[in-house]
Amino acid sequence: MYAPQILIEAALNGLMTGAVYALIALGLTLVYGVLHIINFAHGALLTCAMFAVWGASAWLRLDPYAAMLAVVPLMFGAGYALQRCVIGPASGGSDNNILLVTLGLSIVLENGLLAIFRSDTRTLDSDAALQVVEVGPLLLSTPRLIGFATALAVTGLLWLLLERTDTGRAIRAVAREKLGARLVGIDVDHVYAVTFGLGCACLAVAACLLMPTFYVNPRSGAAFVLVAFTIVVLGGMGSIAGALVGGLVVGVVESFSGLFLGDSLGQIGIFLIFILVLLVRPTGLFGVRG
Amino acid sequence: MTRRDALPLVAALALLAVLPFCGLPGSALNFLVTTLIIALAGLGWNVLGGFGGQYSFGHAAFFGTGAYATAVLQLRFGWNAWGGLAAGIGLGTLVGLAIGYLSFRAGLRGSYFALVTLAFAEVFRILANAADLTGGAAGLLLRLEPGLATLQFSDRRLFYLLVLAFVGAALLASRWIERSRFGAHLIAVRENEEAARALGVDALRVKLGAIALSAGITAAAGCLYVQHFLYLDAGVAYGTWISVEALLAPIVGGIGTALGPLVGALALQGLGEATKLLAGGVPGIDLVAFGACLIAVIAFAPQGVVGLVRRLRGRRPAEA
Image 1 (cartoon, rainbow over the protein chains, first blue to last red):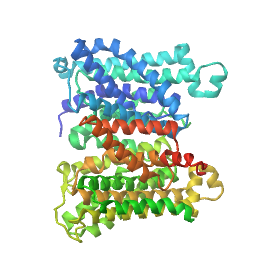
Image 2 (image 1 turned 30 degrees about the vertical axis):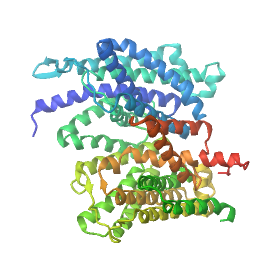
Image 3 (image 1 turned 180 degrees about the vertical axis):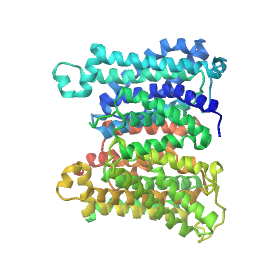
């Protein structure tokens, strides 16, 4: 069998990756909770953010963590505009239409990136990926540790934003009762777009945290999006705590199934969880039936 | 079926049947075969998605099962191609029933149904990519061996006519759905499942019937695909591309109409070739056009090309 140290390291690695997964899922779950739509363009938008981080590093020589200051507002703006100018008007409010519009969007974005950057895989040319911290007998990768801490902090900030600010209150009101919110004078279309923008901002943070240890090509977001769907479904659609717990669980499961089953079959553990949760308890661990 | 309804259908089929005998170059024939295979997959999707309102994002699960069954039975078990074709359709139907039973029993619809079908297709892709039976990541190669038993013809036009026959059969099935009691039940479930149930429609059974027929038709497309290209790997068989193509064709052509998937497949593949010609070799540019087309159709022409034509001819769009 495996030495305990390997198992502990696998668990910790899983937790650290899981926190970044949680951040990606957070964007998805927020959009679902408020707009009641599944955003199929989430993966493609993550790829866009990753290319933005890569571009900032390759052309502007920006550190990926510093790039956060530019990429986050950029993605927020892009998300706001997309919801306001494309998704909202094109879908006319029908759920199935929104599903298809976001699918169309993901096809356009992914292949647009393919047309511009071709299918080459790109990484940041820095040695940050190799730095490690010693914790007792364990070696932990520094960028992953930073990713873990930042992801948790951003989740906390988002929670504060939703709970303590007027914008957050408006978002929660729209999520609960759209018509009522409109009646008390909340601009629902604006709130929708802000929410979508926040979802994209989460992706921008995730992209900055991923790029030091990961690579980007036009398809790399797709790998994360099914994982993010799994997390959201597992945690309960629309639940922020659920996304965080779901993300950590999925990170650990992926890490262990990769360890036991090898890389090619490793991902199957996630999909099996996904299908099982959908079939047995589609409301997830923290969800309430809508 | 009234004569006026049958006319566009018969005309389209007759035109497509005559086309290859008008001195078409080989590349154009290839294009038509691929387009018809995608149209067939789309006709399958349309049964469940168009008439039944259950949007699947994972029809690759059926397409790939049909394709793999056809290839594996010939290569590993020495079946002839016709047997492989029949078994492929049968297996695809069974997979459809199984996925349908699990997800409809769990009450999944809308986005949830889309997600679970997507996940099933991904599980199949990962398994096919790892298993020895399916040739793993290297894929399967069928021997080039023209003959009636291997379903490979030295005259490609014959294979084209075979694909067209399948498309014709699927069109007839769609027309039958539009006219039959089963179809009326299916459409009632799409419009309002609770109300349909209150009127005594067995919603689960109707949806299972729809997904079985839908999966069978799309599986047939998979079987014909592997017979045409003689090569298969997990990314082709169970990849997202075919799930997306199967859904784009009916939506762009006219969702829930019999001719929609065929019209949509022809329009989209034509558009793809045109953009490729114009943009010259830039990868992905045809798919950018597809995605933009999808958004535009949903925004401006929810009944697709067929709906546009109907509107231009001054007829009211068909009551769903």
